[in-house]
Length: 257
Image (cartoon, rainbow, N blue to C red; front, side, top):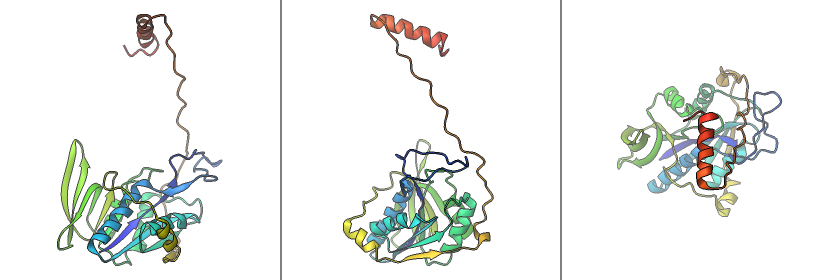
């Protein structure tokens, strides 16, 4: 089975995020960049499918600037066979449709049975690229997948999706696009042996024509969330007195009772 996995490099969730002077992008200086967490589930799922089948290839594809090879090498160290870097200039931002079009340009040339993406990227939370990619390729898709099983004949996959109050089970003919959610698996850590092997695995660089990555969505402004007001400590000689003061505050100031 040949599986293509789309990954994105995003700021670490523990990083102190600062807005750049332009007011339209994140200042990436001194920011630790990592693989999008939802994409880790996609990489792990691809590796498990290949291991279960005993044959095939796992190809990683990512769009980005000069630091993108770092995330590709991470996926290769996890066990992927090769990677493709679709080169963008540093700071270049694509909307979901432009991203899907660029991925389509590259992936349509590959031999694949299944395409996996994270359900969304944690930096912009759009959650649209995988679905748009499926539409451009003209193949079926399922999103927010938390269960995945290949059929005996290898011609379809049985997937479980999270829905309100439970799970829905679908059977999807291949080739298809699936977007992965937390709970699908537990991504492996790259081993030292895997890290050493990753240095020798193929990493292809691709440059696309400007019209292939023409974005139509512009960022107007980024802003920090409003600061929370400091809390109030309710003093009192006894629990009853504290409770009485708390009720007064909830009624008079917060106006919630």
